[in-house]
Length: 238
Image (cartoon, rainbow, N blue to C red; front, side):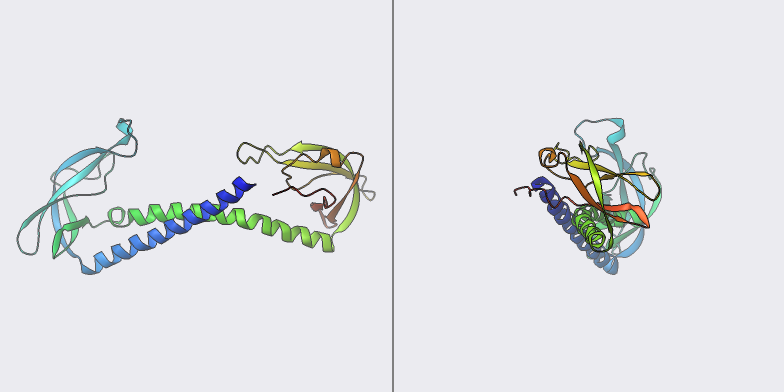
């Protein structure tokens, strides 16, 4: 549980930090666009480079265009695009639209969506994923608690028979899976058997449950909505 707590805080912090970084990059791009002027350049060659991994492979190779243009003062300028792709997005001799700062022509960019906004889009996407994951870990127990409170107050209590304690392998934290108490109840009105599983427990409660009947609060209109009352169990030490 401590690991899960650390994870939710880290994910939330990373998400917020990435979104703040996205805002900073976007503001810099907007400032650049407000001061930049447009011109036309020519791709004079393509530079091969490798992205990400130290294991050089065909898949990791990218091609960045080297572009020559003439600034507003008539001076020739050459710059290397910071973005690349495989296959190359441009070919030698191709004309491309550029934007640059008149007082610093080397601060130039190809005038397209990817070159200008790729950093913001990628960082913002990652930030959103991390923030949603962290916020989800925060919100799930809160929403679960509200549902349980509602069932305790408005649900119908039924006495169920303890069946077993199973391990919930669908959830794993630091290599450990939580336990669930499984009970069943025969609905006298329909003679149907209902099986209920408790919320996750981070210790094996078997020795505290044997030969017990367990109260479950159910929604009479939808028995699939229920709460297994394990308030009699000892609390896990922090």
